Length: 271
Image 1 (cartoon, rainbow, N blue to C red):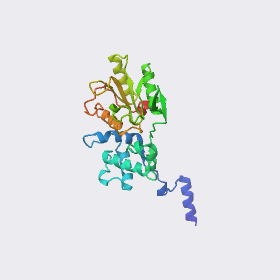
Image 2: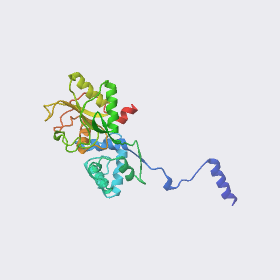
Image 3: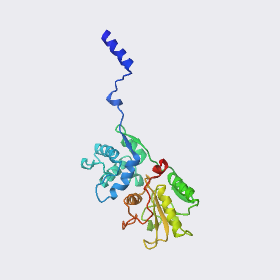
Image 4: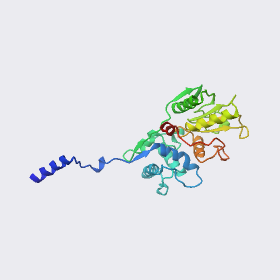
């Protein structure tokens, strides 16, 4: 009895506690990194991993594998088309449809997938739908546009907003979901157009000046809010192509916009 009491006293003096396996801390998934990889990796011509995303993507893929939604051969830290398809199947299993089952992870589905397996850090959310400059956008996009306007000391004229399925057919579905706007360039000089595109890029948009020579449209600026989890699949592809130095069009030609460090809105805020 004296030995047992002495052991208890010693533990108390040392401040030592014995943790059970169930109380061990869960690993964390960086949602920002996962969503970035889910935009970029499916657009790559090879299996290069998105920097900083491997550990988090592996945890997501392992959870999908545990639900028999992803072949173990694709549990590799690369969020390619097989992982996109598996995540979309998981979203459908939760009852999601349409844009909510595109394979791009959302905050709620990622939290649910991680239940008992991992926690989610650096979470992303597009926020509620709202109106800005007469167009439908979400609160994240609205805040990003307002910051670009503040830096430019000018207000934008939005010619097409977000959540516009079946709208302008020349947009090829990019505006079906969130995070995408077209801006008028009426009255802007060539230099001003470039400055606007550069500023949009600096606050977290994949942005380009579109010209009549590229398609059935007039001059305008097309902008996709990177890592907006309400993006349509077409907008996801444009965000991925932007990271890969492409123009976001079907021909996947080299990027023709001003070079800037590629940042998401959240990275811009931290910087």
